[in-house]
Image (tube, rainbow, N blue to C red):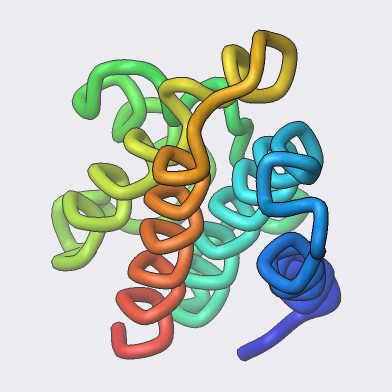
Length: 133
């Protein structure tokens, strides 16, 4: 299942966790990486089901919207009713939690290590949902 983007995101997470300067030194890279990883995992999930339209892409900005709106946007990218995807609600809930503070983390002041670790854990939870779907 692992594609190059997911490998890159995991490399960044591992690098952040091992860094002697601490995870906060990787705050901005983590914000971007986790956002990119979330989008990639959704696309992997849809491709695994052979329902993603050729050339279709998921936009990370969608993931901050209300779930009904995200579903409408994703529905335009797939060839089956979104209601047929039993894991989609859980996937979108996790993605929302990763994405909602992305810009503050990426462009704002430093956040706590706990916030970053929570985002990392959310990413791994999302990865597990997609792998087991």
